[in-house]
Image 1 (cartoon, rainbow over the protein chains, first blue to last red):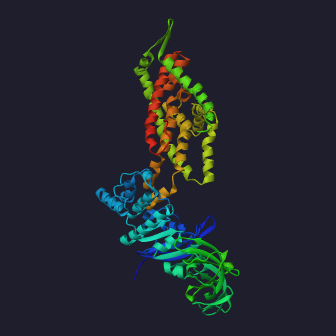
Image 2 (image 1 turned 90 degrees about the vertical axis):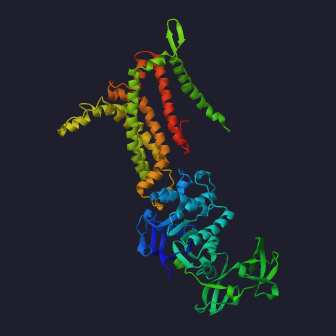
Image 3 (image 1 turned 180 degrees about the vertical axis):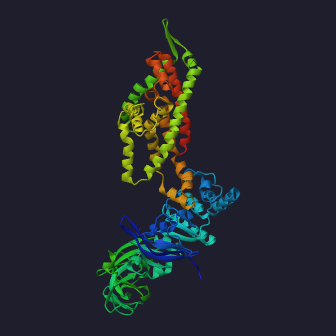
Amino acid sequence: MERNIIELRNVCKDFNGHRALNDVGFYVRKNEFITLLGPSGCGKTTTLRLIGGFEQVTSGEILFEGTDITSMPPYKRKVNTVFQKYALFPHMNVFDNISFGLKVKKMDKRLIEKKVKEMLSLVNLKGFEKRSINSLSGGQQQRIAIARALINEPEVLLLDEPLGALDLKLRKEMQIELKRMQQKLGITFIFVTHDQEEALTMSDKIIVMKDGKLQQLGTPEDIYNEPKNSFVADFIGESTIIDGIMHEDYLVEFAGRKFKCLDKGFMKKEKVDVVIRPEDIKVVPTREGMLTVTVESVIFKGVHYEMMVRSNKHVFKIHSTEMVHASQEAGIIIGPNDIHIMKKERVADEK
Amino acid sequence: MKNKWIAYPYIVWMILFTVVPILLVLFYSITFRDGLGITFTLENYKRFFDPVYIGVLVHSINLALISTAICLLLGYPMAMIIAKSPIGYRNMLILFFVIPMWMNFLLRTYAWMTLLERSGLINKFLASLNLPAFNIMYSNSAVVLGMVYNFLPFMVLPIYSVLIKIDKNLIEAAEDLGADGLKVFREVIFPLSLPGVVSGIIMVFMPAITTFVISRLLGGGQFTLIGNLIEQQFLVAGDWNFGSAISMLMLVLILLCSSVMGREDKDEGGVGLW
């Protein structure tokens, strides 16, 4: 049985009367790589700052290995943070930055030197001890920030959009490297990002948030394949969301036709959201298709073509390696596997 | 750069009122005038290295250093308090600091005289409580008090403006790495505020070492400072050549001091005097 290392219970946080977090509760197991994902302003960074101790909860509690740390100051917590803009000390060189935490703990000098060396080789920056922070590139500063946090051997490492400032190629490299470090060191990572692809690539578990509320918690596969509501579906990956009516178990109507699906347990004639991933729609010759559509636009995306196709009032997004020219007709096939039915969110819940 | 001409009035101003006067002072300091005409000499400089004058210089440096140190000890915590206050409150505190500066410097110093005098307000108040009188008028303490009072804003404001710019993330990062309040201050806040401290020290030390008004009014003339010495040479003794030589020596001293301080500053991207 794995232990819960961090647990949040009914956490609420207000800023000047505005509710930033509303009844958030989840737990993190030891050695997990967990990602808080959501659009900006959804409360993911606030959640991280509460765990780090930089903000105080308005209500609720935060537990660390079962003990309440809700009001413990940051310097006493066994967590370390990699800040969004790295927050490296500009008046110190690389060595002094990385060794800061150990010096504060008054560790033996020779041991500190040895550990800094190890850390620098872990982040692939051997021999950078004497360099000044300002002489480093963004990617290098990023690695120093990670080394500075990891050298303290925290139980939990908090990362606040650490890759946001890097270019795409460097970001992909760092994603793989972070994952490698996490597996090698066996430290729990809590990672904040608004980049869904990043979240899917790196995480063991993803927490999707919106407007200060937890939307869904699950493995990347769960969240991608079985989004709980249309917000999650829309946020994680691209998808077409259209209105539908559930006629009976395993039978849904949308775009003027009935489709078989794998969902059940809805009321008769219940209005639902139907979510279809663009790569799940197959393009076939017109007479073989379940629906006949007109291609409105085609964009070449490298691996595939992105096509917007229209059937009456309904527009679908399709990713396909087969290309159909714009304004031509085609057929599409959507299998029961590829149809995800979601309860309509009542409008009253929104505001 | 375009619009270079915008700088021309400034350049003209600088030449007329800074460069030319300094050259004049330099000229006076290395010349001697008698009935026969003008002769060049270093005699004016030699005269200064007399134990009496050196004593005056040491005394001036002493008082200026003490005032600067007191300003720093009082000013740094003040700057921190202001920097940590909420924004609206902060502007009000700054205003309180600046308002006395709108009043004439001489007036403010005269005000201290009436406060500190033997039959001044403070002593009247003490007497009404049957407490012994408080006599610091015409002493070193009164001069230091006057300097601290007048120059404190020049210490607070530069430190405040540096403190306010320190990235909050750095403080959080230090806390995150296990530093408590004291260590955060010692290892992060204070080192990062050094550029402000350096310019504060320069801005207090320079006027403090050259002041002659404060020492004359509050020191009562018996504690001659270097500023009074120069004043006397020009206005009382009429020896412009010797007065100029002392002024040049002071100029060199101040430039040396501030260049040493400025060097400390340079690594942090602060503004030194050169």
